[in-house]
Image (cartoon, rainbow over all chains, first blue to last red; front, top):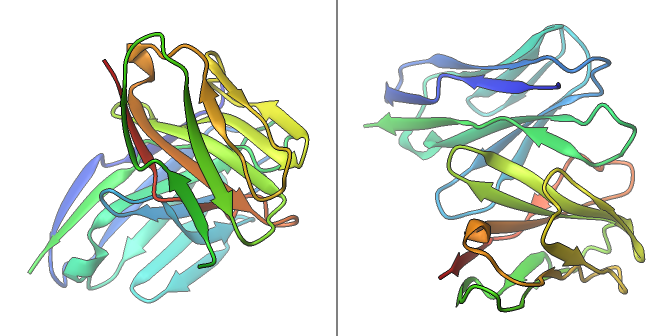
Length: 112
Length: 113
Protein backbone atom coordinates (compact mmCIF):
# COMPACT_ATOMS: atom_id res chain seq x y z
CA UNK A 1 0.00 0.00 0.00
CA UNK A 2 1.30 3.44 -0.88
CA UNK A 3 2.38 5.42 2.13
CA UNK A 4 3.58 8.91 2.91
CA UNK A 5 5.34 9.33 6.24
CA UNK A 6 6.48 12.61 7.72
CA UNK A 7 8.94 13.12 10.55
CA UNK A 8 9.23 14.46 13.10
CA UNK A 9 5.60 14.91 14.14
CA UNK A 10 6.46 18.15 15.87
CA UNK A 11 9.47 20.47 15.92
CA UNK A 12 10.18 23.36 18.22
CA UNK A 13 12.88 25.78 17.05
CA UNK A 14 14.45 28.94 18.33
CA UNK A 15 14.35 31.83 15.89
CA UNK A 16 17.37 31.47 13.60
CA UNK A 17 17.86 27.75 14.36
CA UNK A 18 17.85 25.95 11.00
CA UNK A 19 16.38 22.46 10.67
CA UNK A 20 14.93 19.96 8.22
CA UNK A 21 11.66 18.08 7.89
CA UNK A 22 11.45 14.69 6.24
CA UNK A 23 8.82 13.16 3.94
CA UNK A 24 9.38 9.56 2.88
CA UNK A 25 7.17 7.73 0.41
CA UNK A 26 6.72 4.22 -0.88
CA UNK A 27 4.70 4.89 -4.03
CA UNK A 28 6.02 3.44 -7.24
CA UNK A 29 6.31 5.54 -10.35
CA UNK A 30 6.31 8.84 -8.51
CA UNK A 31 4.54 11.55 -10.48
CA UNK A 32 5.59 14.42 -8.31
CA UNK A 33 5.81 15.38 -4.66
CA UNK A 34 4.04 18.42 -3.27
CA UNK A 35 4.59 20.50 -0.15
CA UNK A 36 1.85 22.51 1.53
CA UNK A 37 1.79 24.79 4.56
CA UNK A 38 -1.19 24.92 6.92
CA UNK A 39 -1.73 27.63 9.51
CA UNK A 40 -4.03 26.89 12.48
CA UNK A 41 -7.70 27.20 11.55
CA UNK A 42 -6.98 27.59 7.84
CA UNK A 43 -6.82 25.46 4.73
CA UNK A 44 -3.48 24.25 3.39
CA UNK A 45 -1.51 26.54 1.09
CA UNK A 46 0.51 25.16 -1.82
CA UNK A 47 4.27 25.69 -1.56
CA UNK A 48 6.30 23.52 -3.96
CA UNK A 49 6.21 20.88 -6.66
CA UNK A 50 9.14 18.50 -7.13
CA UNK A 51 9.17 16.06 -10.03
CA UNK A 52 12.56 14.37 -10.23
CA UNK A 53 15.36 13.23 -7.93
CA UNK A 54 17.89 15.99 -7.44
CA UNK A 55 15.40 18.75 -8.00
CA UNK A 56 15.35 21.68 -5.56
CA UNK A 57 12.90 24.52 -5.08
CA UNK A 58 13.27 27.58 -2.85
CA UNK A 59 10.94 30.16 -1.40
CA UNK A 60 12.22 32.66 1.13
CA UNK A 61 13.63 30.60 4.04
CA UNK A 62 12.30 27.30 2.72
CA UNK A 63 14.07 24.89 0.40
CA UNK A 64 12.59 21.59 -0.73
CA UNK A 65 14.70 18.75 -2.14
CA UNK A 66 13.82 15.36 -3.58
CA UNK A 67 15.60 12.00 -3.71
CA UNK A 68 14.30 8.69 -5.01
CA UNK A 69 12.82 7.76 -1.65
CA UNK A 70 12.25 10.97 0.29
CA UNK A 71 11.96 14.71 0.30
CA UNK A 72 13.33 17.24 2.73
CA UNK A 73 12.02 20.66 3.59
CA UNK A 74 14.86 22.75 4.94
CA UNK A 75 14.02 25.81 7.01
CA UNK A 76 16.96 28.22 7.16
CA UNK A 77 17.13 30.81 9.94
CA UNK A 78 13.42 30.46 10.70
CA UNK A 79 11.27 33.28 12.00
CA UNK A 80 8.15 33.01 14.19
CA UNK A 81 5.98 33.54 11.09
CA UNK A 82 7.29 30.22 9.75
CA UNK A 83 5.33 28.46 12.49
CA UNK A 84 2.81 26.17 10.79
CA UNK A 85 2.12 22.56 9.96
CA UNK A 86 3.93 21.44 6.84
CA UNK A 87 2.31 18.73 4.76
CA UNK A 88 3.73 16.69 1.94
CA UNK A 89 1.62 14.81 -0.58
CA UNK A 90 2.04 12.46 -3.52
CA UNK A 91 -0.39 11.55 -6.32
CA UNK A 92 -2.28 8.30 -6.14
CA UNK A 93 -0.59 5.63 -8.21
CA UNK A 94 -3.79 4.97 -10.15
CA UNK A 95 -4.11 7.20 -13.16
CA UNK A 96 -6.46 9.71 -11.55
CA UNK A 97 -5.24 13.23 -12.03
CA UNK A 98 -5.58 15.46 -9.01
CA UNK A 99 -5.95 12.81 -6.33
CA UNK A 100 -3.38 13.37 -3.60
CA UNK A 101 -2.35 11.28 -0.61
CA UNK A 102 -1.21 13.51 2.23
CA UNK A 103 1.18 12.78 5.06
CA UNK A 104 0.14 13.55 8.63
CA UNK A 105 2.30 16.67 8.71
CA UNK A 106 5.05 18.17 10.84
CA UNK A 107 3.96 20.90 13.25
CA UNK A 108 6.69 23.54 13.47
CA UNK A 109 6.79 26.14 16.24
CA UNK A 110 9.42 28.88 16.05
CA UNK A 111 9.93 30.88 19.23
CA UNK A 112 11.53 34.34 19.38
CA UNK B 1 -14.05 38.56 -4.22
CA UNK B 2 -12.10 36.00 -6.19
CA UNK B 3 -11.16 32.78 -4.49
CA UNK B 4 -12.71 29.74 -2.94
CA UNK B 5 -15.34 29.99 -0.25
CA UNK B 6 -17.10 27.49 1.96
CA UNK B 7 -20.34 27.75 3.88
CA UNK B 8 -21.25 27.42 6.60
CA UNK B 9 -17.99 27.83 8.48
CA UNK B 10 -19.39 26.08 11.55
CA UNK B 11 -22.27 23.64 11.80
CA UNK B 12 -23.75 21.58 14.60
CA UNK B 13 -26.26 18.94 13.63
CA UNK B 14 -27.88 15.86 15.08
CA UNK B 15 -27.31 12.26 14.16
CA UNK B 16 -29.50 11.19 11.25
CA UNK B 17 -30.03 14.64 9.77
CA UNK B 18 -29.05 15.57 6.23
CA UNK B 19 -26.42 18.28 5.94
CA UNK B 20 -25.07 20.05 2.87
CA UNK B 21 -21.75 21.85 2.84
CA UNK B 22 -21.27 24.38 0.10
CA UNK B 23 -18.16 25.21 -1.90
CA UNK B 24 -17.81 27.96 -4.48
CA UNK B 25 -14.78 29.02 -6.54
CA UNK B 26 -14.41 31.98 -8.86
CA UNK B 27 -11.36 30.89 -10.90
CA UNK B 28 -13.24 28.56 -13.26
CA UNK B 29 -10.92 25.77 -12.14
CA UNK B 30 -11.66 22.40 -13.71
CA UNK B 31 -10.86 20.28 -10.67
CA UNK B 32 -12.59 20.44 -7.31
CA UNK B 33 -12.07 18.31 -4.22
CA UNK B 34 -13.55 17.57 -0.83
CA UNK B 35 -11.28 16.50 2.02
CA UNK B 36 -11.84 15.81 5.67
CA UNK B 37 -9.17 16.42 8.29
CA UNK B 38 -9.11 14.53 11.56
CA UNK B 39 -6.50 14.20 14.27
CA UNK B 40 -4.56 11.03 13.67
CA UNK B 41 -5.64 10.71 10.04
CA UNK B 42 -4.55 13.92 8.40
CA UNK B 43 -6.23 15.04 5.20
CA UNK B 44 -8.26 12.39 3.41
CA UNK B 45 -9.94 12.75 0.04
CA UNK B 46 -13.71 12.19 0.06
CA UNK B 47 -14.70 13.00 -3.53
CA UNK B 48 -13.30 14.84 -6.44
CA UNK B 49 -14.52 16.26 -9.72
CA UNK B 50 -12.58 16.78 -12.93
CA UNK B 51 -15.26 18.94 -14.56
CA UNK B 52 -18.96 19.70 -14.37
CA UNK B 53 -20.96 16.47 -14.21
CA UNK B 54 -17.79 14.37 -13.72
CA UNK B 55 -17.19 13.12 -10.19
CA UNK B 56 -15.30 10.22 -8.66
CA UNK B 57 -14.80 8.67 -5.26
CA UNK B 58 -11.82 9.35 -3.08
CA UNK B 59 -10.46 7.43 -0.12
CA UNK B 60 -13.44 7.81 2.25
CA UNK B 61 -16.66 8.36 0.21
CA UNK B 62 -19.15 6.30 2.25
CA UNK B 63 -22.00 8.38 3.65
CA UNK B 64 -21.35 11.33 1.36
CA UNK B 65 -22.90 12.48 -1.91
CA UNK B 66 -21.63 15.13 -4.30
CA UNK B 67 -22.88 16.84 -7.40
CA UNK B 68 -21.40 19.36 -9.79
CA UNK B 69 -23.89 20.87 -12.19
CA UNK B 70 -21.90 24.11 -12.53
CA UNK B 71 -18.13 24.49 -12.77
CA UNK B 72 -17.95 26.88 -9.84
CA UNK B 73 -19.98 24.92 -7.27
CA UNK B 74 -19.29 21.57 -5.62
CA UNK B 75 -21.67 20.82 -2.73
CA UNK B 76 -21.07 17.92 -0.36
CA UNK B 77 -24.08 16.26 1.26
CA UNK B 78 -24.09 14.01 4.28
CA UNK B 79 -27.24 12.00 3.69
CA UNK B 80 -27.71 10.84 7.30
CA UNK B 81 -25.06 12.34 9.55
CA UNK B 82 -23.21 10.13 12.02
CA UNK B 83 -20.93 11.08 14.91
CA UNK B 84 -17.97 9.64 12.98
CA UNK B 85 -18.50 12.39 10.41
CA UNK B 86 -17.60 15.05 12.97
CA UNK B 87 -14.59 16.66 11.33
CA UNK B 88 -13.20 19.70 9.57
CA UNK B 89 -14.09 19.65 5.89
CA UNK B 90 -12.00 21.40 3.26
CA UNK B 91 -12.91 22.12 -0.30
CA UNK B 92 -10.15 22.71 -2.84
CA UNK B 93 -9.83 23.51 -6.53
CA UNK B 94 -7.11 23.36 -9.13
CA UNK B 95 -6.62 24.27 -12.75
CA UNK B 96 -6.48 21.93 -15.72
CA UNK B 97 -2.84 20.97 -16.23
CA UNK B 98 -1.93 21.75 -12.62
CA UNK B 99 -4.29 19.43 -10.83
CA UNK B 100 -2.02 18.82 -7.86
CA UNK B 101 -1.49 22.51 -7.09
CA UNK B 102 -4.64 22.86 -5.12
CA UNK B 103 -6.16 25.96 -3.57
CA UNK B 104 -8.03 25.26 -0.37
CA UNK B 105 -11.00 26.98 1.17
CA UNK B 106 -11.13 28.05 4.83
CA UNK B 107 -12.88 24.89 5.97
CA UNK B 108 -16.17 23.96 7.64
CA UNK B 109 -16.08 22.62 11.17
CA UNK B 110 -18.93 20.11 11.47
CA UNK B 111 -20.04 18.60 14.76
CA UNK B 112 -22.58 15.77 14.79
CA UNK B 113 -24.21 15.25 18.19
